[in-house]
Length: 288
Image (cartoon, rainbow, N blue to C red; front, side, top):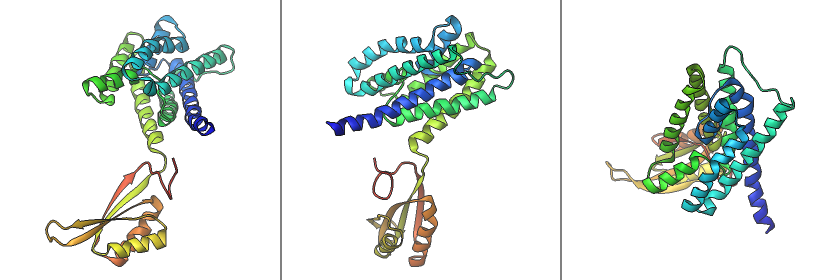
C-alpha cells in the first residue's frame, strides 16, 4: 500500500510542479503582453482578452465536457492524470490571479520589444508542460480530442494538435494585433523545443554499433576498461558472406573517444555507427 502511494506521489508531485510553472508563465509573460497559447488554454486566453473571464475558470469549465467525453471514449485509467493535471492547473492559475490582484506578483510587461517576453514565455510554458508530460499528466483540452480522434480515425496526435492550435491562434487575429500573433509563433516554437528537451532528458547518450570480425575481443575490452554492458549480435556480410559480429553498446558522450580507440586498436577495419540516444534506463545509467 505504501509503495503504491509512493509511486503515485512520485508522479503527482512533479505534475503539480509542472502545472504551477505553466500557470506562472501564462500570467507572468503571456497575458500581460497579449500573446497567445494553443489548445483549450488558448481559448481561455481569448475569452480573457475579449470578455475578461478569469483564465482559472475558463480552462476548467471548457475542459469539463472533454473530461466526460474522454471518460466515455478512453476510460478512467487514461484520464486520471489528465483530470488531475487540468484541475491542478486551474488551482494554480487561481492562486496566481489572487497574488497578482494583491500585488504580490508583478507581471512582466514589455512596452516596446516583445521578443524577450515571447522567449521567456516559451521557456516557461515549455518547461511546465515538459515536466507535466514527462510524468504522465496533461493539461487536458486538445490532448483529449487528439487521443479520441487518433483512436477512432487513426490520425496522429501531432497532426490533430497542430491543426487545432493553428485554428485557435488564427482566431486571435480578431482580438490582438498580427505582430503579437507572430511573436506567439516564437513562443510556441521555443516551448515545443523545451518540451522535447525535458521529455528526452538533458542527458544525451550515444548508441554505438560496431561491425567487426573481432567481436569477442572488443566486447571483453569494453567490459574490462569501460565497465559498460555489451551485446553481441551475429551477422553475415551481404557481399562477402563472411560471418561477423555487431557489437552494440550505449555510452555517454565523454566515453565515445575511448570506445573508438579501443575498437581501432583491435580491429582498424571495423565499421562504426554512432547514434544519439536521449533517454537511457538501466544499469550504469538512470533508474526508472
